[in-house]
Amino acid sequence: MTRLPRPRPRAASQREAQPPTVAIALFVGFVLSAAFTGLAAVVIPGVLLMVVAGFGLLIFFVLQYFLWAKWLYPIVMKMEAESSPEIAAQSEKIPTTISETDP
Image (cartoon, rainbow, N blue to C red):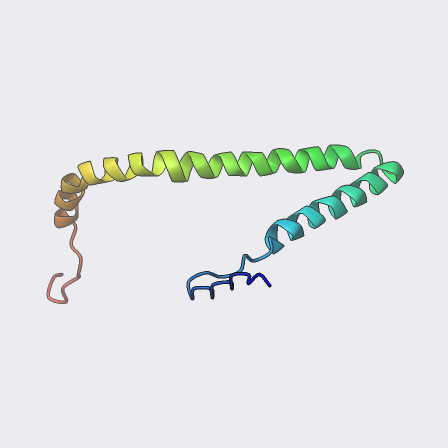
């Protein structure tokens, strides 16, 4: 009789692959919301326009995030660092505490 090789034991670092639960949940959520929108569009024709407007607002906010957080924020921080000595000189002229002996 032929002896088959025994499988090697798994290493502790190798884990079984987790099922893509987040992707499945997002897909199911998209399908359910598309189905609900389709049914609502039969009754209320303006629903599709509202959905398009909602996607437009979403895209607008995403673009604003990338515009400010990824592109303009480093530029503003650089400008602030360059103007820092001027701001420090102005703040020295302004009294920070009020003395009781001053009239």
